[in-house]
Image 1 (cartoon, rainbow, N blue to C red):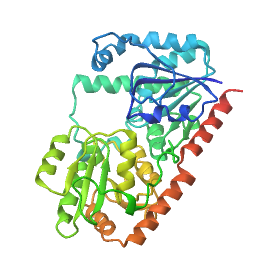
Image 2 (cartoon, rainbow, N blue to C red; image 1 turned 90 degrees about the vertical axis):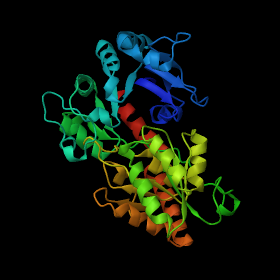
Image 3 (spheres, rainbow, N blue to C red; image 1 turned 60 degrees about the vertical axis):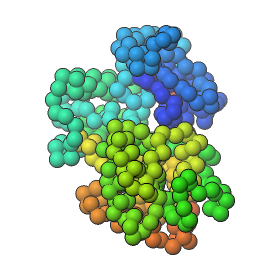
Image 4 (cartoon, helix red, strand yellow; image 1 turned 90 degrees about the horizontal axis):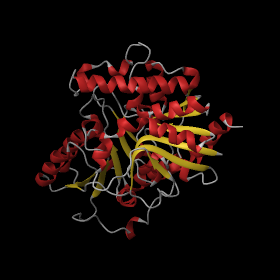
Length: 399
């Protein structure tokens, strides 16, 4: 079977989700087609064709500005390769894949990942979860914003019409997609599983060196993700500061984003906070293995919510329990009370209470929660299971 894997832009790291299924199915003949890519992990050995040429001296950002001119070229390249099936990741830049599928009658599968599902198609009202101005921090109006929404709606409409199957990474996102106008009969939930052979518990705690700047038996709280309002890093910093006096701990913040200056300021002011910055995949795994709990206090922002939260699965696969706001698709990425604790974004004391519970939990109870977390991910959210489900979808479309 020949499968064309298509995406608008492909950055690896961090977007391993776009290639991990292909890497786990080496028996399939894969080829990646995109507008612009930047793949810096030598483990990603898939052949890649960029529609925007690589020109010496032209930066990645410069190449991105040219992607509007390369849509037709990408579509022609996909058709020329003559795949048995096209799998598009994210609907926002799906037109090249859609046009290639129409031209050749090759089956198209589209996976929705988040923001690409939140726009109404065919004149429908916006999905209900986008209608709450009280939680929105995005600017209103503006030609660029309206143009971006119109472009996403156009692509989603085309992908919904042409795709034989539309996959959503959570039930939450499937509901959003249906509200946006994607036909229910085409929608299936396909959880993006994590590699439980890579994300594994580390050595016993007695063999793990303490974090730099750490001390004694202090427990470690970990955040991994974009430093943005959506991920709730401000709320985590506030909760951690409130507890640091009575329950000493370390807070390590991994990632980059628009709120990085606020995190840096907190790290300078608070001895227990360390901003680690962005890390590679191996280093992120090391952080998860060494942490006592990973926290993702994601929130509704501009009416949108976390579609899934793969970082929760990665942490649990490492045997590290999680705390997450019960927002969007995050409840589907854990078993509240068994593999971690769910919190309420509307209750400012909820996150603090959950942190207090974990930081004061007996070591044996915390270890039991970590073991349960690992077992659940292996059984329900592993890459092995996800790959088997995707093979089934492909098999239904390609005889």
